[in-house]
Image 1 (tube, protein in one colour):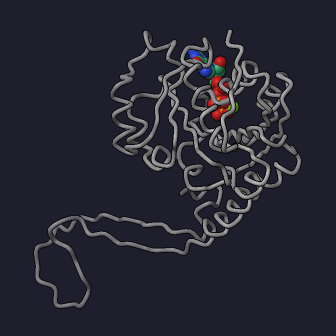
Image 2 (image 1 turned 90 degrees about the horizontal axis):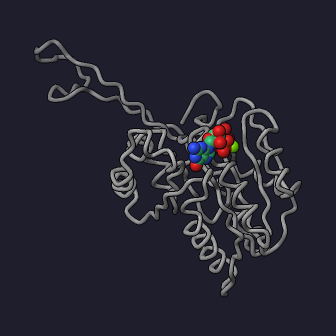
Length: 267
Ligand SMILES: Nc1nc2c(ncn2[C@@H]2O[C@H](COP(=O)(O)OP(=O)(O)OP(=O)(O)O)[C@@H](O)[C@H]2O)c(=O)[nH]1
Ligand SMILES: [Mg+2]
């Protein structure tokens, strides 16, 4: 967790401090050294922030359940294509009741993009913060007042680290990784990929121009999270969106507990 936004305060952190010994002597003082490998010093701090967040997230989850709302927490590194994916999804699923919560450190830019599709949207600005939490989400939900039996997309702050830790009460985290970011992201940010139910590999229209190994990225994601589903698509061209809509319809069926179709008008 990071120190900048305070999300690590009162939480558990393991600090490993390797230091190499150059001496080979016997100690006559009582402290402990590991001579076979770098010594580590572990500091355990409390987990209060995350525990409080989990409680509030549970209330949000009940709030969604009471209204038959499917809530999805959309995470990615900055610029992977979260808002572009939402714009296309909203335009191509006109019969699906959608509400959007936008999370960014600053500006209303993403909210304006969503607003231009005609979809209800609330923007959360986190200032120095690098993730949304359950309390912010609850406040945004009250302002959004999303339609019952619909879908709420929560676009998290662009960041593959802290949003992995904060449950917002969603039914599933959907992680977007784009082909311009490099094949290794699932290995470098394992917590985010471990927390995901679905990974969308976006910007596949750019595959001919970038050094990205799609199969390897899938393998890396499955190393971190063996059960994760992966779909490759392009939010710009719409390629692969049929599978995304099928996944969405499937999740919506389980939320509503009965068969329901998502009718799309794909371009
Ligand atoms: N070529 C290509 N460009 C894309 C695709 N999806 C998004 N982009 C572009 O990538 C840039 C960032 O897209 P956004 O949708 O704003 O990304 P984001 O994840 O919402 O960004 P933040 O909210 O800032 O984290 C924009 O210039 C998009 O047009 C895609 O599938 N292919
Ligand atoms: Mg965005």
